[in-house]
Image 1 (spheres, rainbow over the protein chains, first blue to last red):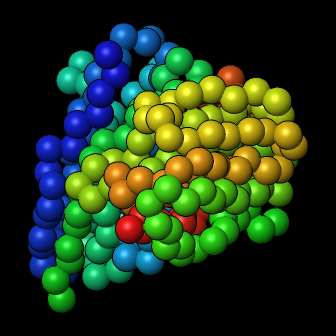
Image 2 (cartoon, helix red, strand yellow):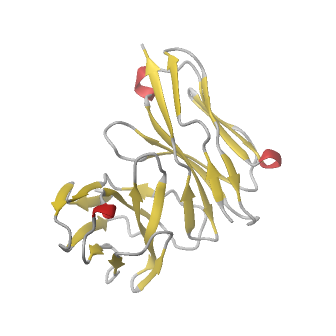
Length: 113
Length: 115
């Protein structure tokens, strides 16, 4: 069965601290995609990154970085030098079987000034 | 492009009432889907469509109907609303139904309260 686990329900850090959001997934498919989405207090879902199952190369985009490890079925997201605007709920998602997607329960990140 | 649009933004229903949540996209995307988001839970897939005339059930389809008569529109119908359907509903689309390459775009959401 497919599953996405975000064990961290809530995280609170002080501005400028680094923070890592964990995502662990389960799937029997050999071809799949992993995503991270951000949901700010305004409620919309914002796409952050997509990674396919054959590409374990880590990615950095500004203060954001992602670490994909198939050996541990993890796709973790790190924010460096966090800012108040990073406060949001972050969702990890797994796309499998061509058209099915399952989301984790989300991690609420609060950045304190 | 307007992207993915949803109407209404907010709706209050009484138990047993019916209504349709509208979703439209102007990106010529084949794949469209509906999710519900409940407190403490991630998004759960209700129904999806891989193209006009084709729909299929997701994880939580009971109590909802969909149809896809055009590429642009994918309405979600609640035939007899129940308090358990109180939720935030998101519509999403991506370019194709079978490819893994595309980004999925989400609408702004519809907040539904069933009394």
